[in-house]
Image (cartoon, rainbow over all chains, first blue to last red; front, side):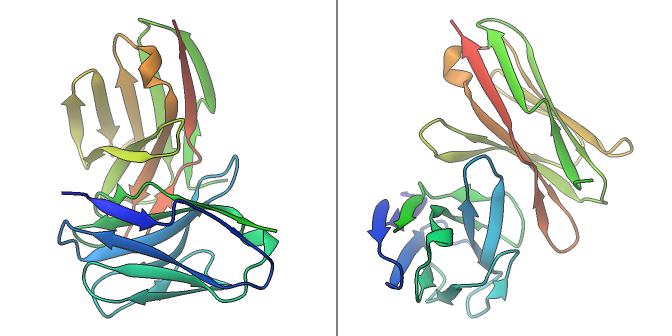
Length: 112
Length: 107
């Protein structure tokens, strides 16, 4: 089992460009999450999906959109990237909402 | 005041020492999650517990629900234990994250 996978691992964007971060899990988990982590700070929840077909805003949703494509996949889209979105992005999944979470390797995003 | 506070923020110790990292919270919870973030950035789940104590290898996690406090202990610490240790508490509608404790174990 691969667990939680994320692509890409690194990305550099120019201000205004768009991109989609992909996340997939093979643990048959119901819930999936997107976090960002900034230097010296803890994890902050961007969006989560408690189950297939549902998504909800987290602590810092502005500037992002998500799609729960199916039970396995949860993508995060930046429509018009801004330098403030430079961060490391983590995807996670859990069997049920807010249970033990398993993390992907992260995507390091730089917006110039 | 943060709802979840970890102490210390930073800890440097010598190889072999017994390590204790603390997590205190101010909200009602149903469970508490300990995770480890490696220097390379990967995040690994260590424990999720709602009462008592759990042990895995040299790691021991305890929780006291009445005192709203949890501790993560590392016995016979090793340089490979160097990482950021994060606690998160599971409330009714959310998971609240601590800021992490950065641990450095020197050989």
